[in-house]
Each structure stands twice: as structure tokens, then as C-alpha cells.
Length: 449
Image 1 (tube, rainbow, N blue to C red):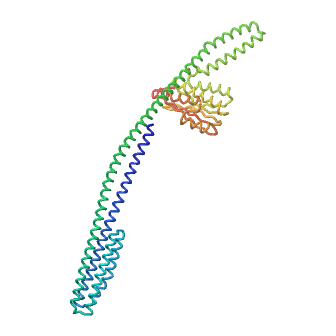
Image 2 (image 1 turned 180 degrees about the horizontal axis):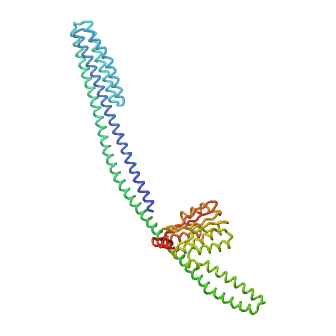
Image 3 (image 1 turned 30 degrees about the vertical axis):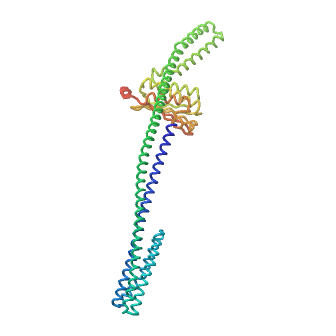
């Protein structure tokens, strides 16, 4: 498996573990919340049982007070307590509906309380009918003691059942809480372990990519150096070939022409000699032009500006394109390498204008600054396709060797080339920095002039 696939699997496992941890935490919180609800429910049942006992106690005290004093206010208070006892019993039955055992006990409690109340009502009726019947009141009281004991027993059983259920729920919640803690800790540790593995895999992948990028960068640098070396060799071969054409072939042609001139003076009416002389003149002119195009002698002798003017004039004559050249009146002398780079870029730019731009006019501007020199070549042609220009700016491909060579020549001297194009033409700007001492010498020589 690839490192990328392994990293994806490890990250997925870590995410699943974190998801399990989250689910366990949610279940624990829900169960704790449920337990708190059952605690509240138990308290509600206990409170309801207490309400039943309290209301029964109020009713019992008022009954006893009425039997002792025959005060009607106590009898009224007794009757007011009866609905409250019924309401408390009903509320208790509602609270115990979820538990069959408690529901049955609540029904028994309700029956017991009703029977006890029936005895209390009978004792009140007996008191009203025969206040002196002590034996009848004693019999009713004895029966009421049994119901009171039964009531107390049922209430205690219900309290004990609620306590037992609450204890079971708390134990279950504590067990669930412990398991949740174990699951959370285990998941967290495993997630950290998996994430550390994922991190190592990512770092390995990143190191591999960086290594590949460094290799690609080194290959690109090697290719760039090779390209620069080829351009330098090309310039050297052009200079050498230009010199050979001028010094060797040119001299032979001139010598042949001199001999033909001598023959022509001896045979002035010989048409073949005149035609041969004209052919030799054309050959000498073509040889000189080719020699100068390969490497103008003015470039080494005078500098870039003079060589550029000569080349631009010849280009305008050969191509029919109007070219305007603007340069400072007093151009400082540039280093040899900068002169060559500027001239080759100028050659390539004008060649591209002639081949591709379909322009009738071009403008060339040369500007000098204390720290750099700028050459701007602008044509008024059809422009470069936006997609093609974007590809060249971002990737430097699909534009042929001309623009690529121009860019590498500028980079050789630490400069840069900027190209902008619209439907009305293209502008090429070459910016080449000058060393501090070169810039100082240039401006010192300008001041001296």
C-alpha cells in the first residue's frame, strides 16, 4: 500500500475512535441525566407519601378534637382535609404507574386509607347519635389501629422499593460511568497513537515530496545552467563564425574582386567580367551582412546602442516594419556581457515581431538607471494569446525557444523579463541590474564627459 493510502486508513480509524468516544460520552451523560430524573421521581414519591401521612394526621387530629370538645370548627377542618387526602393518594398513584409492584401497593394503600376514613366517619356519626357510647367508640378505634398499621407497612414498603430501585439505577449508572471512562481513555490513547502514526506517515510523505521537489529543482537548475552554457557557446560560435566570414571568406572575395577589376580594365567591353564583378559585390555585401548579424563588430568596439541602431536600420529595410529607437543621447558604456544579452534579446524580439506579430510599427526604448538598465520593445500587432501568455508566465512552456532563451539570458545576469499583451500589441520589458562598481563607473564616466 502507498503511504498516502495508509495515512488515510490511519486517519479514518482515529476519527472512528473519536466518534466512539463521543458516543460513549453522550450515552454516559444521558444515563446520568436519566438517573437524576429517577432520583427526582423517588423524591416525588416520598413527598407524596409524606403528604398522605400529613393529611391523614390533620384529619385524625381534627376528628379527635371534635370528639373531645364537640366544636363544629374541628369537624369542618376534618371535612376540609378529606379531599386533600384523596388528591394526595391520586397523585401518588399517578407517580407509581410505571411500576406494577408499586402500583398494586398504592391501590392497597388507597383502599386501606379509605377504610380508615370510613371508620373515622362512623365514629363521628356515632358521637353525633350517642355521645355516651364509649364502648362503640373503643371498638371503632381498635379496628382503626389495624388499618393504621397496614397503612404504615404499605408506606414503608413503597419507600423501601423506591430506595431499592434508586440504588440499582445508581449502581448501573456508576458502572456505565466507569465503562465510559475506560472507553474514553482507551479511545483517546488509541486515537493519539493513530494520529501519531498518521503524523509520521504525513511527515514521510512530505519528506518524499520535498526530496522530489529538490531533485526537480536541481534538475531544473542543471537544465538552466546547461541552457545558459549553450547560449554562451552559441554566442562564442557566432562571434567566431562572424570573424571567419569577415577575415577569411570576405578577404578571398575581395581579392577575387580586385583581380576581376584588373581584368575588367584590360577588357572593358567584356560583359561576363562586369556580371562577375556585380555578383562578387553582392556576395561581399551579403557576407558582411551575415557576419555583422552573427556578431556586429560595433557591439565590441562601440557598445550596444551603436550596434542596436545598425541592426534596427537593417531590420526595418529588410522587413518593411517601421521601428523607432529611443535611447539617451550620451549612453554610458555597459559591460560586455550585458551588451551581448541586450543585443540578443533585441534580435529575438524583432524576429518575433516580424514572424508572429503582423505589426507595421514597433518602438524600442533604452533607459539607464543608477542600479539597472531597462530595454523595452513594443509592437502594435495582434498580441499574444492570453492562455499562451499565462502558460509562459506560470510555467515557462509552450512558447518556443525564443522567449525561453530571452528569459534565461536575463536570468543569467540576475535580471527578469516581463511580457504584457493585448489585442493591440505586445510589450516586452527586460530589466537587468548593474553591480555597484559598474554603476559607479558608468556615472563617473558620464560626469567626466
